[in-house]
Length: 231
Image 1 (cartoon, rainbow, N blue to C red):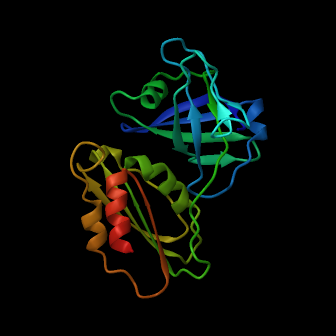
Image 2: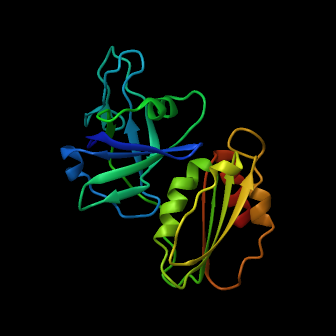
């Protein structure tokens, strides 16, 4: 398990529901990005009670190939999407959903310049067919950072549709793309506040007959429903 520390260089609220943090520092020069639009990794946070990092170490004899020090509370870790990575400056951008409670959201809202997180290795899942004629992206607020990066990376001439579910009108984002992208925003549902409307929105689509690609990210129950329908 390869971990590097990233240091907070910049912080801003993209919307009232999303805080963007840019990480840098010497250790991030060793980070190897996949370049994939939905690139994700594990962020390791300081233990809330102590503010210290208790991180896993490689151990070939352990079931997962790594273990935490015995007798200590481990650092909480959660998967997050890399919203952007600049290979020239080794700066990494992560967008955090703002909500009440939760280690990651609390940390992000309180983060100050110079604070650090431990960052794991990344991987990506997005892999459309080379000859796909259209793409559809479906996400709630947790999937919005990946959806944003994916759409920004679409080539000119690609036809795409993005269906995004957010809590409030003020949580909508402006996302530029060279592709021809139609945005559909569903407001006030899903995201832990009400049943998701994304499965019904997907069922209501008239998908083209040409070869295409559908990418979905968000809460697990919603994901299972949509994937079952598409298959």
